[in-house]
Length: 439
Image 1 (cartoon, rainbow, N blue to C red):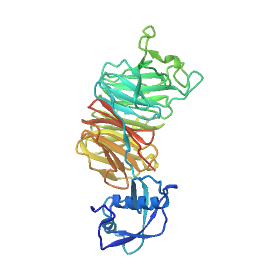
Image 2 (image 1 turned 135 degrees about the vertical axis):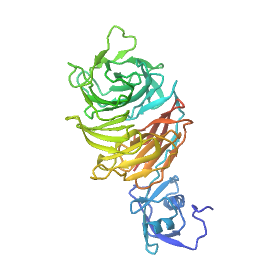
Image 3 (image 1 turned 90 degrees about the vertical axis):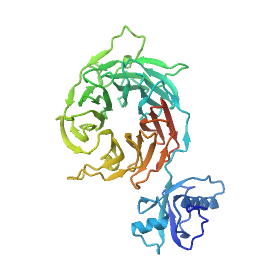
């Protein structure tokens, strides 16, 4: 058996005690046992599964990951202890958790061109934008129920807006913002329970004009009453979602089918502009009411005060940046990727330092997307032009899993329903990878 196996002859052993925060039937006895010192994660997982099957013969084999002192084991046990300066003469307490890797891959949902952007924030559907100028709603991630038609260029960004339901709307009425190479943003409303044999084609209720080049990224204010956009014209613009007289939300009457030609679309200008970047603003994130984060091809990440319109942080990163997200501990860590294979994480709360606190280097080409898991302070994903989506945990420098379903550049990816990843790319396919167990 190889070095990961539990039957490997080994003259050296280590006494360990397995502990877990998982609930029954995943708990093993906490008495210490001796295991070969050269076991890696797979061998440790086999031992835990054998212990679980001894107490429950119907237990289904489950992959586990292991931590010592809060750090994931990604090398033989003895090597790990040596590297961390932990004595192998005492009983080692090893915590086991569910391994983070997709258990299922669905058949892809085909598009007519590159899938450039995806939003998985609504558990009922996945939203995609495509180079064929259309955005699409995929019910349960697989059935196209709505086509958003109206842009005159590739759809480069999509965002589901968390607007509040009022007397004129219901929880099924979803508001969406899209951005395009046609230099505009468009706002759409649709009924999430509408479905049929053929996709419903809907038009935008409002066109937002003002950018002079392609719109690259959109993010909605947490309250849902505004969105911001980053563009190739180097600017960030802020827009109202509701029109004058609409009250706190967009009227359901604003939902319109493509053939409703008698109802003109509203056009609206930006309410504010944030100026400072000197090249394409590739990514914007609006996680708090008064704070917007942006990344740019000018190698910088900036934090903006919405009220004053001024940048409160200007962090130069050394690479042209394609993507940015905010999350992790305290929802305060920044992760970004761009024109090299390295995913970088910063903690802007640490004054006087622009050095990343984490760097992940397993991709082999530019990084197109990075996203924190919505519920975990440790987990995030990245997608790359190398054709792979990778899952990461801040407690180890090695990827937890690699999703290599795409046969071309991966242009976008997002978490969906906490346990799945939706990804799209230059192979014109939307893939759903599911069964990812995040503790």
